[in-house]
Length: 313
Image 1 (cartoon, rainbow, N blue to C red):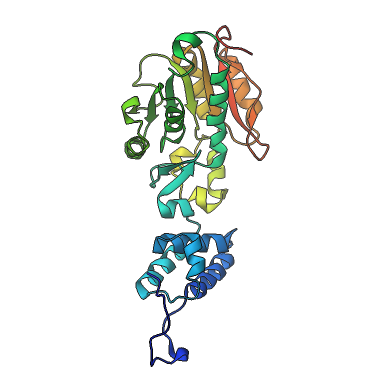
Image 2 (cartoon, rainbow, N blue to C red):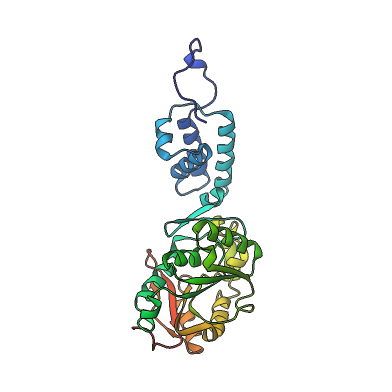
């Protein structure tokens, strides 16, 4: 922990050993800046706060205190991890998503803020529902999250809709273990189920919302991505095949048989994929809405449905 209080009596001020919190942060900031990290100062403060289990305010208050050798070594090890591109969220093993914290590990995609657009769009579409609204109170939805990963999309919607139930599907059993732990921590485990399956092969029934943040990067493009994605996200959560669209073809083929009357399919898309994904869905009879943009103004989500009888346009 941080040393506090005056220098012990009889010890010359100029002979202190070790470095202060401020000096450690300065050194970390320089190392991260040299490594090309976008926000070296912020990341250094976050990593030292994590190392010491203190708030950012406490770091400021103890700026001139000496850093114990053990804490310094742990901090410098974390800085080295960040310097090679490992995201802060992966170092922490946690990511905030839609105001809630989710566990991460190497088996799951690190959910980004762009994916919150899927959640926001689903919440908006639910408010439009007219058919069966009285009996469902707009919340007794059956949800299917394909490629659930950490469970961020599914579990967030279950938390927002207290009467909803849902299934998270992933081909990775390791990912499903993380999703199940997140469900317990979020208090929605009794309303969620996790199934290891290749798409919907192991499922039965229909769903009011089918949600998916699929792999949509063209195979040849993955190694050109920033290291925080290319190196630290699981490749199977990124690789969308030669043109990046394989997952959307699979989703189009299964949607008609898995959507309840008036149900919605919501998918995240990569930049510039809106027209191609809409074409894929339209070919199997799905009716698509205009893409929904993320906070950067990039088309990020497409919503599609089999019919429109149960919903307001």
